[in-house]
Amino acid sequence: MLFEQLLYRLDAIIAQPLFALDAHLKMAPIERVQYLQNYDYSIHNPKSSAVLSLFYPKNDEAYILLIVRSAYPGVHSSQIAFPGGKKELEDVDLEHTALRETNEEVGVNPSDVKIVKQWSDLYIPPSNFIVSSFMGISENTPKFQLQPDEVSAIIELPVADLLKDDLVQNVKMTTSYAKDILVPAFIIEQHVVWGATAMILSEVKESLKFALQVR
Image (cartoon, rainbow, N blue to C red; front, side):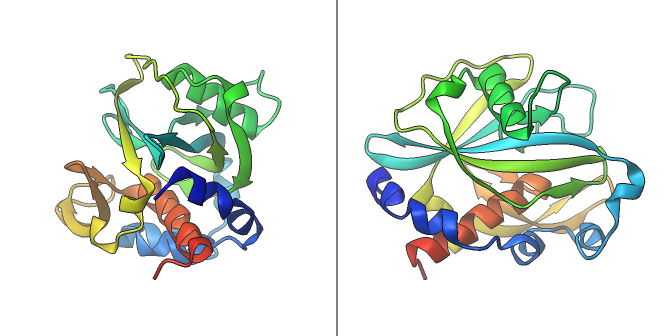
C-alpha cells in the first residue's frame, strides 16, 4: 500500500468509531477474555502507560513500526511490542508518554510525529498496566537509533501485509496463565506477536480495513 493512499484515507480512519472489544477478542488468549468483558480493573489501581503505532513511508510504501524488546528480568522480556512505556511524573499527558518513550527507545523525534488518533485502552493483568495507544504519522522515513538496553531490533511491517488475514495463526505457547496453550498470534518475519500487542494491532488492522474498504 502506498503511503499516499494511507494519507488520503486518514480522515476516514480518524472519524470512525473504535473497534475496541470486538477487535481485542479476536487476538485474546482465552484466559484474557474475562479481563476484557466488563471487568473493573480499577480495583487493582493499575499503572498508566502509553504506546505508539507509528506509520511512516519507506520507498513510497506505508509501514508500521514494532520493536523487539531486549532480554531482561520481567514479564515482557524479549517480546514484540509497540514502542512505549510507563507514564512518568514529567509527562504532561499520555500522548507525551508515547512520544517520549518512542524517542528514547528508537530515536524518533517527537516533532516529526503527528498524533492523529487514540485507540482503545487495554488492561494488562500480568504487569498491572493500563495501556493507552496512539496512532502517529511521520511523513518522512525515520532514521532509527535503537536504545540497546530496551530494544534489540525493530520490525518494519508493511501495512499491506498487516491487512492480510493469513498473517494470523494459532500457536502453542506458555503464558503467565498456563502452559502449552493455543493462542492467536500474528506471525511476522518469524516473530510471534501475541497478547496485548496483538490485541492492539488487531484494532489497528480492523480500523484500517474498514476505512480503506479492504475485504
